[in-house]
Length: 217
Image (tube, rainbow, N blue to C red; front, top):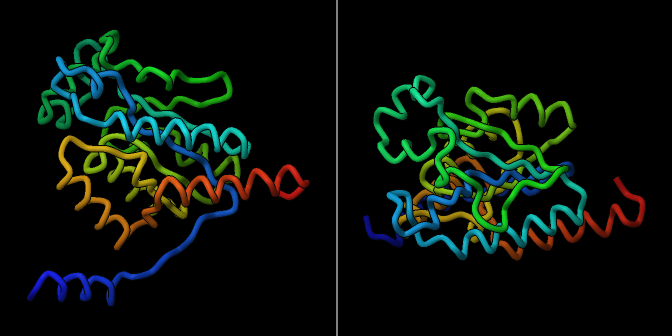
């Protein structure tokens, strides 16, 4: 089967959009300093993804929607890391106190933003995130973060599985290599979420901001 035929096969099976929700939350996944330090094993060329995520964050603040940041932190003994810590050696940078685990410059948490600390790839696994979103009445999530093929994908699948309409902002996600980045965006868009551009996300958030300023809900 040719490449064009394969793409057409996917389009026939999975070419469906669910759209944005009415009460979204922005989840910014694991933008830690290690991804931006060339001396760190985690380093990836993801400055553009962070810049995009910061623009989306400002739009989310203007629209008065919840902004939730995630980070990863392990006990000094790594006893809470399980098989994930055993398999992925760069996770040693997330042992509590390591400067590589700090939030990237420009993404320091604000007073009104919630920080969810996790030990595994998904922002939902073993955390209170799903319960929190349900309690605040969120019906959907916008995802930005690092890395596309790892924690973003895991969080995307779990967001959908918990019943949240999910949008992955492609420009605000990044990975160490373009191939897994693009492949995972393609697959998430096919099966679990709408993959959208920064422009689409900003347009949506701008509409919410205008609606709420006019007294809408």
